Length: 422
Image 1 (cartoon, helix red, strand yellow):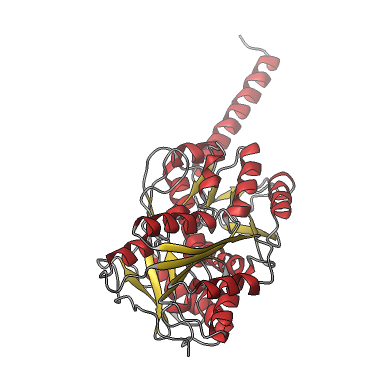
Image 2 (cartoon, helix red, strand yellow):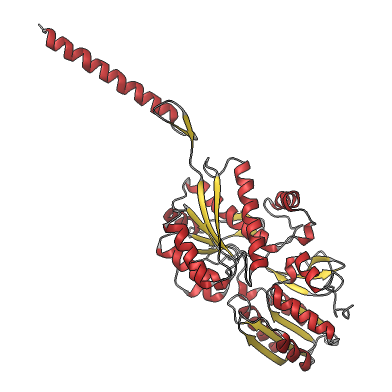
């Protein structure tokens, strides 16, 4: 027979047991929810996924850096409008590196150790990607980027680095193939080269020189100059003095603008001129050189994107870009697509593994899986380069930047020789 004490203990144990059951049921009901419940019973949304990015919002790479910012912000807006990643909104933490290799290191250290970002995305240029990727590797962060494709980026022995765009060294190959395919009577016989001492520009120019020399096209001038150069006149004068029939330049926006201005002033009009970057900046390029008519015939490579390409989500991205920033589709910088592709790749990987854990993301990127982006499919090799990226040759024609080679993917026929400067 149980006494009063025993009955009291039994009553208490039953009450505690009922309480645990109730808490367990409530906990189970909350599984998979996008909110958490506080002791007061109010719902709290999941914390945003913070993504840290360093971009060149001033300095030599500012034109590209600002376009990259547009691409990242456009992707974040698209993701957030559709529910975020794994039910969490995306929040971008963007710092300016002023195109400085020193500042980009400081920025990523701050983004990771002070701002405690969940993820980091890459900056613009191979020059900045190299030191930035080392910082991310030190802290075990996946480093997905879209504008750091220089060969030296991938010889650092890093396991955390992934480039969604085409390998840089091969971007001018399409131009050399087009030149080699010209009838012998039209093919140029001489070429002049000038490039920044930069891991993005110089590998492209050196590869192009190699193939053109194999085709019998004589090099009459070859110049490499510091990336910090601001006076491009002596470099332009050497190209003019060479009388080369084609000009191959490893540039960004400021130097190609200076060269074209010098060529026009000296009435030097080569049969073909191509720049690694600058002419792909749309209205920024045409306004700087004096109008779209001045751009007529100028070539530029593209790592796998143009506004009308039929790739995953591209039509919607172009539509959203025009709604957000205005302008015309042909004026959209390819930098926008490169940045957007970074976000797409990371989101697909996170969704597949149901996690934003950096170690798990790195493993997924090395798994051999294929991801779909506005630039086309992405599949990483062991070094982090995109093995599925395709390069295209573009040219300014009648005020628009159009695809001209290879012929199977082109929208227009190449214009050769280039008309004289207006």
